[in-house]
Length: 302
Image (cartoon, rainbow, N blue to C red; front, side, top):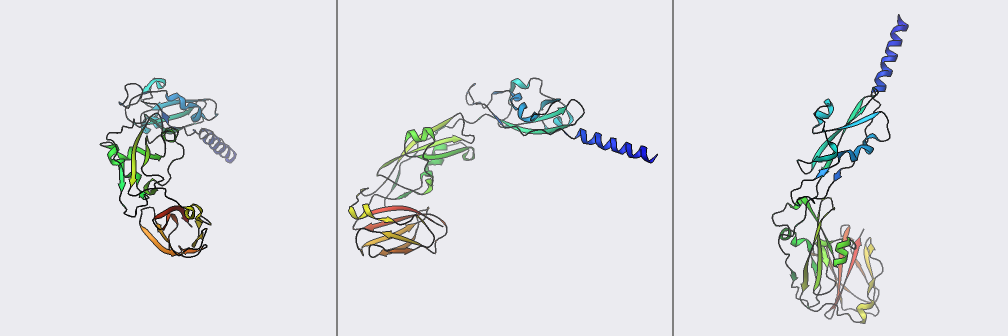
C-alpha cells in the first residue's frame, strides 16, 4: 500500500512539473506611425508580430491575444483577427496567453501597442538675449527656456527636446548640446536648432530655430588668450593654468551650470593655480578676463 502511495505522489508531482514548464518570452512593444488620418492616434497592428518572442523557441504551443489580464488568465475573449487589430487607446496594453497543446500549462505576458505622437511647434520660439555689461559678447544661456512656448497646449511630459548647432546635426541627431540649461555661446549672435521628439523618438520630429545673443563683441582674442589654457579640464582640487607670459591682470571666475558665480580669483604669473576644493562635483565654466578680452573654458570638478 505504501509503495502505491509513493508511486501516486511521484506521478502526481511529475505531472505538476510538466504542466508548469511553459515559459512565455517577454515581447517588445509594437509601434506604428500615425499615417492613416494623421493625428487621430489610431492605426492597424499585427499583434502576431510578437509571437516569435513569446514562443521563444518552444514547440507545441499556441498564442492568443486578449483585452484584459482576466480574459487572458481565463482564456476568454481572444481577439478573432489579431493580424488586423485597430487600437482603441494610445498606448494600449495587450495581454498574450501562451498555451501548451500537450498539457504543459500556460503563461500570460503583456506588451504595449503605441502610435507615436506627432510633435507640433505651436508657437515660434523667442530669441534669447542677455545683457551682461562687460562687453565681451559671452554669456551662459538656458536653451530650454523656449520649451513652454513651443509646446503651447501640448503636454510637456509627452515630448522630448534636444539642441544642436546646425540643421544637419538636428536632423541626424548628432553632436547634441549636452548641457542645454547652461550653454556658453560660441559666437554672437548664434543660431540654435531645437529638435522636438515624441517619447519613442520615432516616426516624426520638428526642428525649430532661435538666436542667442549678448552685448559686446564676441571672439576678440589676442595672442595671450590664444595660448591660455588649463593643464587639465577634469580636476579634483585646483585649476592649473598655462599662460604665455607672466601676468597679474587676469581675473578668473567660475560659474555653475545655472550661471551663478561660485569662485573668483586674480591670477598672477604664467603658471598660476586656483583652488576649487569647495565645489561640488559637476560641470563648471571658467571665465578668464584681461583688459576687456575674455575666454571661457569648460571643466569638470570630480
